Image (cartoon, rainbow, N blue to C red; front, side, top):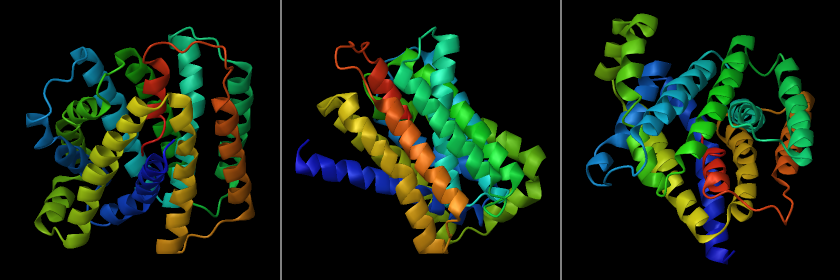
Length: 302
C-alpha cells in the first residue's frame, strides 16, 4: 500500500475506535434508542438525495437496515447505557467475526477453513474471559453487546449477499431504514418524557456526538474504507480492522480513565489473535466476486 493509503486506513480505525467513547458522551444526553435513531437520521439526510439509488435489491437494503441499524446498534447503545465501558464494548463487539463464520456455515453453507475455526475458538475464549471480568461493567451490558455482535454477524451475511458495488451509497440507503422504527421503539421503552427532554435540552456535546457517529464514523468511515477496498484487495485492507479495538481501548483510557485489568488485557490479546488467525488465507484459494470485499467492509465499523 502507498504510505498515504496506509495513513488513511489508520485514520479510519482511529475514528472508529474513538467512536465508542463518543457514543458514551451521546448517551449522557439521549436515551439509547433515540440516540441511535438520530445517528441514522443524520447519516441518511441529506445524503440520500444526492447519492442515487443503491444499485442492489431493496430487500438487502431493508435486511441490513434491520439487522445492523435497528438490532445491532440498538443493542450496542442499550448495552453501553446499561454500564459496559466503551473500551470493553469495542473489544466485545469484535465477536461479530465469530458469529459471521457461524452464520456463514449455517445460512450460506460455507465450510469454514481450519484457520477460521482455530481463530474462532481463540476469539471466543477472549470474549468469555472479558465476560468474567466483573469489575469491567454490568452482566446485562455485556450480554447485550454480545447480542449486538451476533446481529452484526447476521448483517454481514446480508451484506455479502447484497455485494453492493458502492458501499458508501449502500450505507446511506441502509441508514434510511432505522430512524422511524428506533424512534417508535423508544416511546414505550424509554418514554415520551425522556425523549422530549433530550430533544428540548440539546447541547453542544449531544449534537457533536450525534454528528460524529453519523458523519465521521458512518459516512467518512465507510467512504474511506470503501475507497481502500476498491484500490486494494480485501486481505490487504482487512487486517487494519484489528486496530479498531486497540484504538477503542486507548481512547477509553485517555479520555475517561478506563483502566485495563489483567483479565481484560488477556481477553484483548486472545480476541485480536483469534481475529488475526481467522484472516489467514490460502494463497491459491480464489475469492468469490464481491464476497470477501463485502465481509471486510462490514467487519470493522462500529
